[in-house]
Image (cartoon, rainbow, N blue to C red; front, top):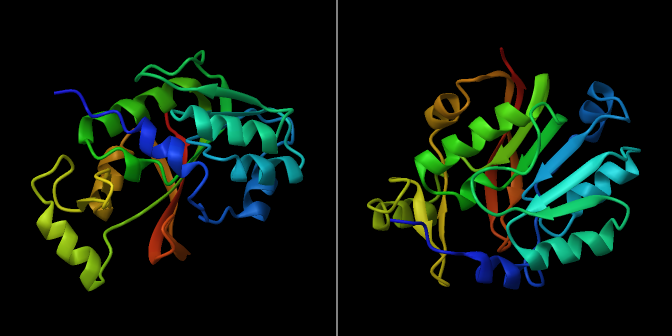
Length: 214
């Protein structure tokens, strides 16, 4: 069964939600040339693209499945390239990018197979040794999340999945799943931080600094 089209939800979110996962500016800037080709996959309203622009990066592409998110990002960074991504095959040649940012995107892809397909595409379009920086949600320990994990444990993604009041299915992840998902990458560091969700709730997030391994 095909996954439902969540584009209407994310189109609406473009004007109502705030995304706050922090980017470690110094570490990124020290590890990449300013001429590096960077993909911000799931770029949303262009927040990270704007931060990359302020750091001096100019070869940045933003991709998102929501046309409204892309329109918002283009207003923020009119000199960058943006694409509306449709389908599992990404519209980029092999080895196109030196780095890929994936911030709060896996949570929007509850299905195991769909996540693995996306990571396979990242391996294809990253140059050898290229950086993959993931920021996403591990399983949370608070009662509110534990209750909804139990309620929606039969959904795609299993325990850790849950539905928002609007009906959109999201997912938080076992730490072991990150390791399985990134089997074709070298995980250089796994960092946990405090952040806020798009609905303004405090949460623990995981950031994984990874390299394409060959």
